[in-house]
Image 1 (cartoon, helix red, strand yellow):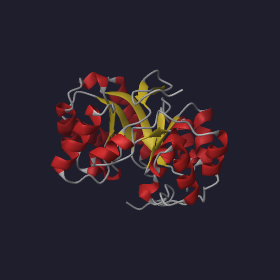
Image 2: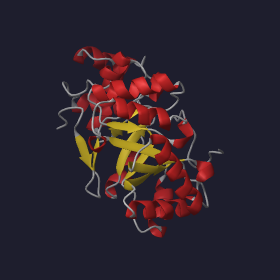
Image 3: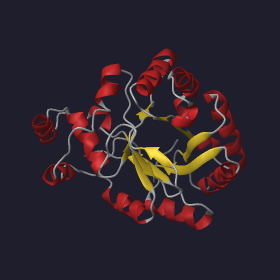
Amino acid sequence: MLKNLQSTKTLHNGIEIPYVGLGVYQMKDPSETVQAVRTAIQSGYRSIDTAAIYDNEESVGQGVKEGGVTREDLFITSKVWNSDQGYDTTLKAFETSLKKLDMDYLDMYLIHWPVEGKYNDTWKAMERLHGEGLIKSIGVSNFHQHHLEDLMKNGNEKPVLNQIELHPRLNQEKIREFCASQNIAVEAWSPIAQGRVLDEPTLNHIAEKHEKSAAQVILRWHLQNDVIIIPKSVHENRIKENADLFNFELSLEEMNQINQLNLDERFGPDPDNFDF
């Protein structure tokens, strides 16, 4: 049973990752980003998820410094971008990210998208950085089952985590089942579908029963599906609301009602045909 915002999932390498973190995608304003990260940490969040392409690693690093919590008590994730993939370029990209964040190590580093012909070399570079102790855990983002199988066939280490688009309209049941069979954790980006499902009657009916918001119901649904979440907000009240998930529980019937909202509808690109 998840008890609070510091509740963690143990990855297959023994490292613990908080079930709830702050995502910082599309946070462009530096002072706003610093404030969001600081607010999240002071509200009890212990995980922050950024990426090179978000162009806000420096602000995240600053927010972490101002959060008032020791670096060792936080879980910081970043990602290597598509144009930096390959062995040597990944090593350089990681060094740049670490410098911008002003940190000695990362808790998690992810391959952002499965760039064909490159992600296996990228993974080898990440395995090296992991071996050198510069990254505690290595994983992937936006990988389908066939990408994961190829990576595991060619690599020495298995990813600890796959971060994918996941929300009630795209419940990703098959890839979640495959990841569970491989002991690979699943993390949802866009966990509330960027707000596009918040007017869904089923969600609002369940929310009323629990005296919660539709967003909180969706986030709780993720947690009860054993999915790690990184909801994004720059607003203090929303940051706190997104963390207030531990004083109610969805029934099996309610979980099934939310599962039935699935339409296999992506709001982001398909990992098999992205072109960036």
